[in-house]
Length: 100
Length: 506
Image (cartoon, rainbow over all chains, first blue to last red):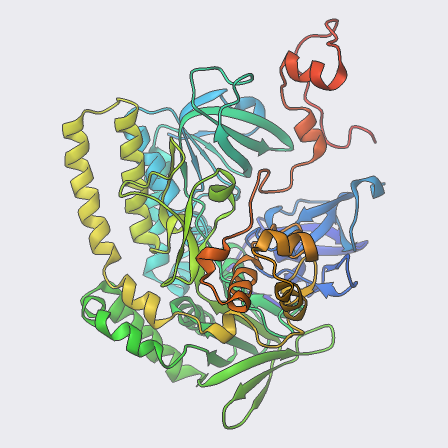
């Protein structure tokens, strides 16, 4: 759904999304990195289980909530991706007690 | 040189002035106040200064600057001045409360207390003055299908382009109204994106409202820029007008936009739909701080009540820039300067004559920057049917998935305001704290009750305005009295503060 402009030359970092190794650019937010990798759906809602993805990219809509390194309810657009980060789809209302 | 605050431990217990938000208003307020010798902390949620408008401009390449245009590039000078200023800057910091200092925990010398969270550690910071420069949000744009993946805010596409050099790869449709819609269209076209249609939902009757203000607009810097944008977009893509309703179609992923018009409907297939119908003041922190607010019919939004120097109804708290009413980046910067200057006067760092002299200069520039604004507000005021969807199946509260029909049902029971509606339905109770449903819910309720939105009022917002973990709150320093109130006794064996770090139970 998104492509990187050819004049951008940041070094790359690798992270995993739902266990799958994924590449991002240095400085990407988790939400940007997921969109760049073709993932537009990043959570399921607690109410109906509908799929949702990043909407505002500026920290106000909370649609891009994901699990990061085991912690649920992280705003993907407000977190910078780092090497080795473990990102997962958030399924419904993930509670802190569900951490592994 | 600014002092970079990397962790909560590096925050001073108190500052003369805490500025919240590093957009044009916040940066300018912090620079101005620090010039007059105030100890300033600027706290901002993002990775780098600039706010949404100047996001990532300090690391933009020449190609980025060409794509985004001169108004974006102008942010570089402001950020350079900021980096040279003598003040403290906490990035990636969340300010979740602002209020009067606690009688028990406060130091007695500072009137205000600011709750800041940085790197998973929360701290109360004392301040004499606070300037809130929390900017604006894109107005909610609810219609059937607006929650599905593949539908995003236009601002989101701009953020992706500015911060990550990402542009839509497929067929892209833009829908809505306002200058930003056309600005984004031109930026995407310049980046080689396939913009297949711009669905302009601006009501035709807006011209009649805007016409009396056309002269001041025509002589403002907006006029020429706006005309160029319109021509550029019209030349390179299809602009569709006259929509009475729109609908996003797809199964789990956006695949087409249906545009209903009085004569015939259109079905436009695409891969990404970008929405925009103007921006509205970001109310969450200002209202949680207890600032009085009013309904602004021209903006079709609530805004906090402020005086000429930005002072709110809460003593010591000022509001500058779009957070106080939509004024744009240049005017926001001048409002920030005025608020920063007023803080210096209030804290006796400058005399009345210096204040008056500088105030006059800033005020003159502000007046110039505001010229043409009324025309823009009237010309691009989003239509009522796009603000309050007629379709009962439309989701209004994205977090709790509450539909317009459900809200109308509850409104018919006679609920007086959005807080009761929230208690009945959970509308506005999710993690976004009403940011994406507030205006819609209020206008819908006002419509059902047949009263102006000002009479209905807004959600009662309370701190924390952003999620803070219980462990962060529990680790806040507390008084002996508070400990006794909860535990009944105080352990004296281990004195000294401890920072509980998140996940310590692992």
